[in-house]
Length: 150
Image (cartoon, rainbow, N blue to C red):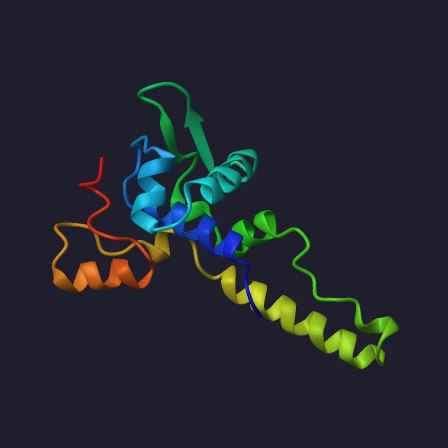
């Protein structure tokens, strides 16, 4: 199973926001920290807002923040929202229905496994990041200490 770059960036942005709850953050700051294109993130944020994952405030002091607790956001929920067509190709017309059943079963198992994780589960350890915490944040694509980025 493979996730699109779109879903990957959406998940990483939510993790970034979850690491600094109740703080408005600009899309530019998130894009810079995650080392992703600002334009790409500009396409993702409206989908996250429409799905109830983030809320936005316009204006000079505006930005985005989580719309609800990260403990209530399941990874699979985000993926289902960012990739509504995350259903494997319909094999029934190309091969035996056993192939179709196997692919459908694997997709369901994949999503069930992701349902076992919330965005809160993926937040790097917070307090004052030590070198090991910085390595962990880099592993999920976050540079520096998100709490210090303004």
